[in-house]
Length: 240
Image (cartoon, rainbow, N blue to C red; front, side, top):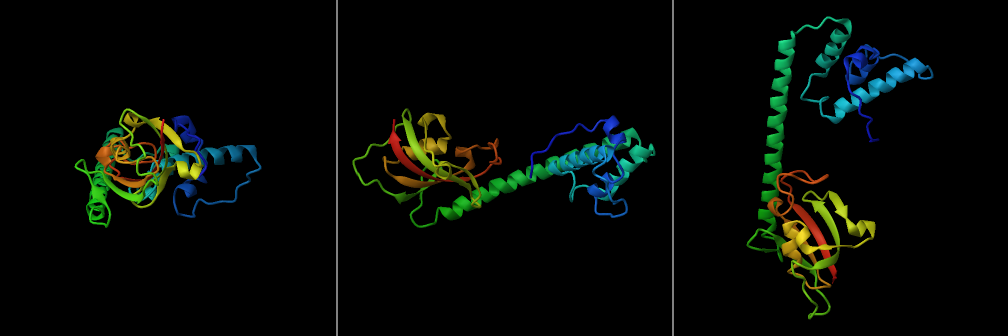
């Protein structure tokens, strides 16, 4: 999806929402009409409507959690100055909705944490997987040709290739895909990497299964949700 242009929905903007926006916000065809998008005013109104609709959808407001028909009626009533609830009732409804969304978010995070725990418990039984006292799991994919190759210390800077996925296989980052190895201080990354890379010799390739508490915990990072267990294929190319 194209990046969204955020629009503040002020009272002024709300009052100029054209009636065809209402058909965008729901499935009813009653308000659909042929638009003359070559007309400057129509094009402007349509663009405002699309931005509002996309912002609502992007925030998850349009969907199973909100009655879209009621949402459209609320817009119509606001435009027509015929609002059916008092200000206090509207505030209470929005507060209840906010509490519902917070509860849904907590349940989603709990589900994410449980999914990671279940995956790691099952994965620990897989052939070749080793679990360390911290909970880190690893699988040796390739061993260094030179059995005397050095192993890094936590204070070293290392050079690696890596491929990171969620437990469902979704790729979130990969130096392999970019074709560019990276270098970093070993004590400056997630603790699962700090621990795991110290088990490797230069030339080794391991697969790490990292619990959330050894990764990004309850905070998450970028596209990685909170409480996510992560999988990394890591090749140790060198110690700088």
